[in-house]
Image (tube, rainbow over all chains, first blue to last red; front, side, top):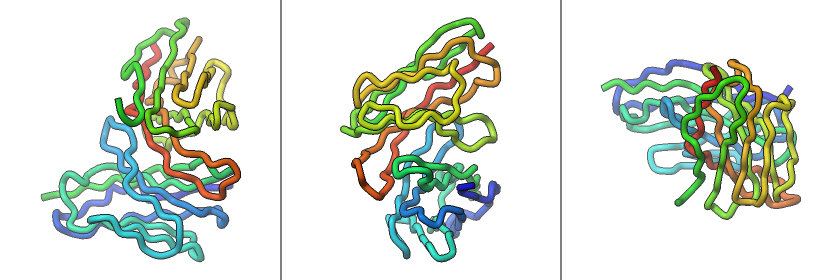
Length: 111
Length: 117
């Protein structure tokens, strides 16, 4: 069964720290992964996409993809209380234009 | 209007009612999706339309009926729903290059919060 798995959390980090969010996937053929941020009561917002092995940086966010280990992560540097949200990892399955989502990791950044 | 819009934002309906959810994308995309998000469950893909053709019906009950009249608009027609259908219904869109090997980013609308009484 093709799956994307995440630790549901909550992950609690102090303001200014690095938050590390992790995701594993089962489909070795997956080529691309996405991280979405979802505030309570809101819809998911795309924050990062990664298509190749290695790191991709965008501001305070770094996505890491390791295809050999079937592992994708999101690092948030200098975490802020406004980063408190649920972070969803998503990868393709069953066709190139369909995504499967993990259950999400709830991040709490405390002052 | 920019991005992906959805109407209505909130809907309360009885089990015998018929209603429709509307989605419109202003991103020039050619693929559109309906998702269901229930409390404490992962996002569930319901339907996929690519180039106005339905390419996926993810074992969704027939009381949900999608319609895609063109690449910018997507509807979800609802009838004789059950209380367990209460959820956040999300529309998304993406680019879909026929024959491509990559999955492209999907952008979500704000969702319709549906309550079935």
